[in-house]
Image (cartoon, helix red, strand yellow):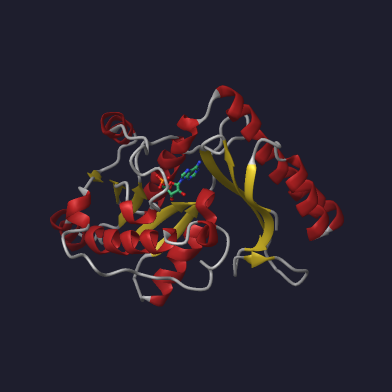
Length: 268
Ligand code: AMP
């Protein structure tokens, strides 16, 4: 991987990087398209990162299909796929972790206390291996992008971080590798997330009331969901928004059956 990147850099080729956990869908491919706009060559990685899963989460059952992923990356003209083994990334006696504070205190950081440390650590490692000029992340994982941007700024990494919009199914459900866990009925119920996010936006535009928008948002979500959070936040801090918040983001996480889904929408 390094030999490729060093050769590209010697030839003044900009490297665009898309880190993923595989089981690729159109959302992932849209990140690759974005990377192509910003760089001369594109690298994707597939690595189901064990350190970002808690012991009670779905690491062992996380969907995998390397063969189909490779075909998709080939059709999308990805130049290189980096697909390391867990033992290469975390060899014996591995002891170093990257911790991003403050913006990780609430929401995904609160419901998955070790998650962002795992994400920041693996992304820092992948950046050091792939040596990209630009890396593309999905708006779908809004708090994750903020964590990565914070880490890159704080650690003086010379990498441009680009956020790419959420790709959805025709019915509004945000694409996710985890959607494969959903039954047809659960998929239909899950479309209420997108409906709720849209309603929150409508209410904000009409009334400018964060409370009213939040109430409308929460009451739209199908009652079969066990909601972790459905809030309107300030994306600059990842704390509940107030009237002086310049930007507003509606965020959702909840479980339907065995599947935990997250989604968000920029309101302002
Ligand atoms: P994952 O494979 O789930 O770790 O995701 C890899 C990258 O794809 C992350 O930057 C995600 O935010 C992004 N991503 C996942 N789903 C979508 C989607 N529906 N639209 C856009 N980007 C996505």
